[in-house]
Amino acid sequence: MAVIKSKKFILRPFKRGDEASLLKNINNRKIAKNTLAILYPYKPKYARFWIKHNLKLNREKNKEKINFAIDVNGEVIGGIGFKNIKGHRAEIGYWLGEKYWGQGITTSALKKITEYGFNKLKLRRLEIGIFPFNKASMRVAEKAGYQYEGRLKKFVLKDKKLVDSLLFAKVR
Image (cartoon, rainbow, N blue to C red; front, top):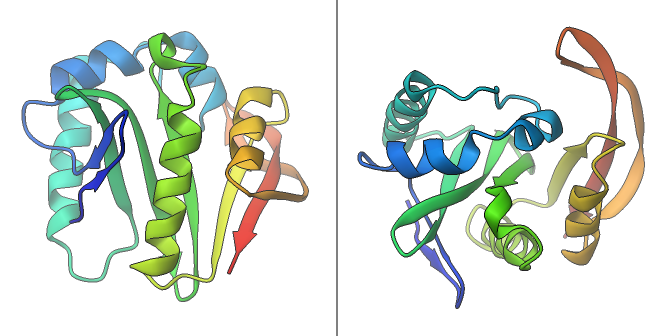
């Protein structure tokens, strides 16, 4: 799997030893509220599972998911990746530790991963689903060149409730 470098961070595969920094930066009620699959409290067993799961994903030949750790000085401060890679399209999801919010890291990571999706994976359409209350994530998507395409009513199950998702996409 690729390693993608920027001035502020590295996008790299998750690896053994990432559990402690992953747990430290992801275990946040605000992150869980704004993402579909991250739980709060985020327990050490979840971090162990996530690392093991990604090590397995990285060995697969036909990838439907690719996840990158956002690494600063050897510490996992966030994550970004593709899911449902099918044919010409994929979905992107991301999160960042609260300590690092407002520094342009997520926008830059999204730009890098978008470039990777189009150039290396040869995708033609990338999508991001964002909760209507997550204004910061909408700004990240827009700054990375994604356009709002519409509201998907009662599209996802979050905390045992059906909630809307806003669809942002970028095409090539």
